Length: 374
Ligand code: GDP
Image 1 (cartoon, protein in one colour):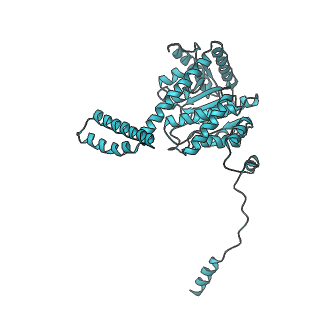
Image 2 (cartoon, rainbow, N blue to C red):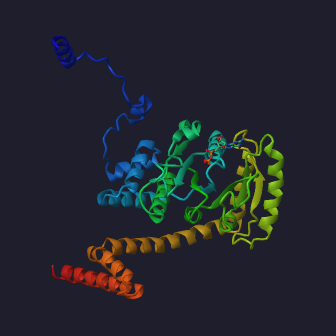
């Protein structure tokens, strides 16, 4: 017993610890030197971005992704100041089901571009990433070479919010990346849901990655996604897979012929590649460059960007109105009661919807009247 007590007492003694190594990557501390403060002024943000300062660019993107009102306000000011310097890039959407080789492909094409003097920003849209804890681009080790390339900037998908919200943040991030001098922007998305449509609406070129040995149904690719593609790349065309890939290439070429002509006048291309051996990667870049020349020649490149800009305005209005409606206290309080009344057959869905709208507009009117009086 006495012995035990002794041990207990000795365990209470504070031992001299060993010095722990810093948990901060030393190279990151270097890049942060002189910029240790967390907040910058609007001018500092804008100047930093225009000088291609990655730390400031990253912090500005964090403001875009923040839900805090004052961060949002500052972010909007930064975007407005950067807009005149944005736009000078090719924006490329890259999609395909998980496992098709998107990140390997992005690494391969990205390295090809960085080695030839391009500056590449890789962004992602993955509305599910909050649930799956960043399934795409969340893990930078997936692009080991690219993530340490001085010409590349990789940013994982903003995780919070609806698809509309995530898409808006990515569009705004594109503006900042372009102002920071990135001439090529990749936007990665998983080819299984609605995020393709959102990505298609913000890029100049849409690339679909496919596999040779899986049917379309297996790959979960909907016809609509194939129709959006400006090129289809049959990935993993290496080793024993090569023959199958060549066969699949001609099948997809035939399939694309059956689709209606594209607005751009461009005939979608199908090509084989191996992100692993990097064979055919330069050819895919040639296809993208040809597309750029072709659509700049017939002015479709500009027309598409103008259409996207007009649509963004309306989408922003839609999103804001929707947010405002559902965040309205009176509306939020009524929704569960009306839902119950619908289940109890006391009211129809349409009448309930009208009641919500009536409450909302009445509340808005009171708000407006109050602000007139004060
Ligand atoms: P993602 O989920 O679409 O981003 O796919 P990944 O890039 O993570 O690739 C999934 C798996 O396929 C990984 O094991 C890769 O090494 C492999 N892979 C990717 N591209 C190729 C390729 O061109 N050839 C072969 N043989 N394997 C590949």
